[in-house]
Image (tube, rainbow, N blue to C red; front, side, top):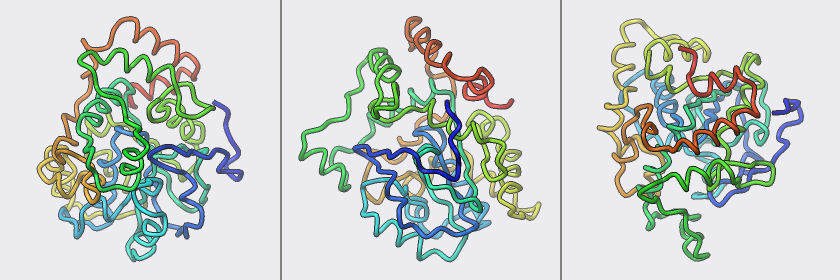
Length: 307
């Protein structure tokens, strides 16, 4: 992927049925802002919770996570309302975005945290996401989809056809994969190309699973947040998958729009390798063809993390 000039960002406009990157226009940034920049189903909510725990330094949050850190690009609320939520905050802000780096403004003093996950596991988690979506959600874009008679795809018993489509069709003219959403591969690559920048930090889902405390300590250093040693056990415990699932009504994203049939089901399994025995040999070969377009070191990290 071509390495864009950071000072020229944004160079793309991502306008999707669900989100719009232009919602960043007019946003008043602060020097200590944290941008949580993830593809879908790759650990976004997990990273939001980690940042919340580091900022507030207590395991219980004063508001549901979705109300503290709403998705900036989401069309479910007006841009004025979303900007107002962040504008009213006096604490250090951690801002959720699903826009690739080439669609974001460049704030040299802000911190960009990109979280990645094995794309095969992202796809499997996406299936759960599609099954759990609430067709009666109280969100602007959901009402618009219903009025336009536009439906997201149903999840078949055998998802291989959907996986083929996911690898071979894009939602934007510059992408060839990722439909009905956007390209996981391009998204993470847009940050990977600038991973040497001091304010861009790459985090992998597998590494969070393997050593949650170690990764949280690493993130706290990157954010220049000091945590007393005696506080780490309860903060790490609050960030564990099981703890977040037990508190799903306050942890799941977009609960203020009743986006899910079951908030706890949003936190489905949180495991890796669910694709094994599901994805066909032909589809795995197609995946190899797609990843062959990217640098080998990037592909290795995308699928495996650093451990």
